[in-house]
Length: 202
Image (tube, rainbow, N blue to C red; front, side):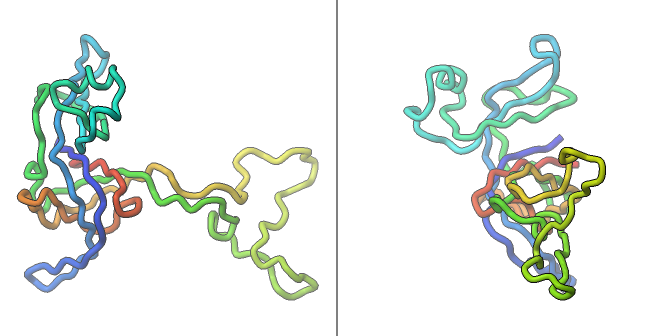
C-alpha cells in the first residue's frame, strides 16, 4: 500500500491533452519519515507510524523527544496499517511513490461550521409562510409527541456541524511534482487550506 501525508493548498482547473478539464485539488505532500514500525509479535498488529513537518524541539516533551530522536522532532504523527513489513525506522517517503492515474482515497477533517439549524444541517425545508404562520420559515416543526415523554435518540435537531473526519474515495492522481513535493488530485478533498490530509492508494 502506498501512503503519504500532506496539506491542502487550493483548488484549480486541470486540462488534459485531449481537452478534458478536471476540477482538481493541489496538495503539498511529504516528505514523511518513518518514526516507528509495529509488528504482530510486540504490538498485536502490523503498522507504520510516520511523522510529517519538522518543528522546534522545545515544543515537545521528553517522551516525544526520546521517541523521535532518530527522525528528528516532527509536528504530525499518523499511523498506517500494513499487511507486510516493507519499511524500517528512519526511512523517508516522498510524493514520487505515486504516479499519474493512480486511484487514491483522501481523509481529513472537514470545515467546522459551528452551531447550525436544521435547514442547513439536515436539509429541512422549513414551514410555510402562509396559513396563519409568521416566523416559522426555518423552524424544525414537531418532533413527534404522542405517548412519548422524552426526545428519542438520534432525533435530527440543530447542533454543532462540521469538523468531522471525512474520507473521499476513488479520486485520481492527475499529476505528480516530485521536485516541489506536490500532487494534483481530481475533485474536492475535505477541509480548508492547510488541513492535514492522509492519502492512501486503493
